[in-house]
Length: 476
Image (tube, rainbow, N blue to C red):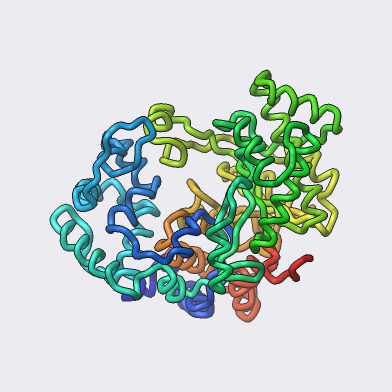
């Protein structure tokens, strides 16, 4: 059963009619997913998905953090523990516990995404509630047993043209090698990787010394020196490009950049290897490495993505009990104008660099990011993400940035999800929101209908392909 035809479209009659026509132009366009966190093993192995709870609830920290805020511990929802404490193992019990608290998601994007996933992906039309929990669970479980609901079959059905996963430079990229062997991966493939070096760049990352040593082993070089560290990163970037990567991703606490000379960077790196680096050293080195990675991008063509502004593991109990990426992170205010100046001074006008910047601080959209993107050839605005990927924030994004940056200094929609089955739903929401925004411009005689039609296709399809260099020639 398809989504409601009027979902998220404007209520005003003239805008509504225009938005329907615009949305129809992109409703069935292929999906471009240039940044996300789907486990490549899902598609490489193409094994049946587990039970409904482990597919839809256990790995989704949007869902588990909401229940935690109301006193339901993640262990009751099957979230694995890192301290050996017991967790619920029965999928049906997890599903029932979740359904008991379904009311908590009223008005949230999580409810919108999950309801649309249940209906559009699994054909479930019975509303979820405590009374219907078992019925809905059984319907989904029955679908998951069918060949048509294996990962690769769903990939085809979702009409995904390109899906980028995200891996550490320590990864051997074995799953991507299998995908390439099966005709799914490699340069120009349907599933590609993304280079995410945070765990070897951030001195404060758990196990940083061991990660750096492992980086040297994987790259086949000595990371005991700063020069060797840079050489190892270049080698791993080349390996990622050979596996299809067109971009790197950097998840830093701030957007700060700084250009250190080689001697100063070496002193910081050596201090960290000795275990003597403090928080200020870690922040300075992260900031320096963003400039260093920009320099590398001039040579190898990887598009840089910067995802700053998250205070990681703010809920320390949750991190201690269940580890990273389980819902314990929160946004913080983030400054960009002065923070990005050293990088932009060096490379912001160089056409070889492409830097896509995201934010969790939406007040910076109109005040800082849109004017920056409207003034530097290298800088593009990434879509609202994480705490800002609701329909309301997507609308506010267009309203905030279009005045200064237009449409063509933005990078198209990025779903940034770990939840494979929600990918088509998230793209559909973004396309509907853009249709509504463009319809208002047409209704106000600010944009001709034919130009709005061209723009919505660009936003949904052509822009992400262009910005993320998905059409580029493979470099030897």
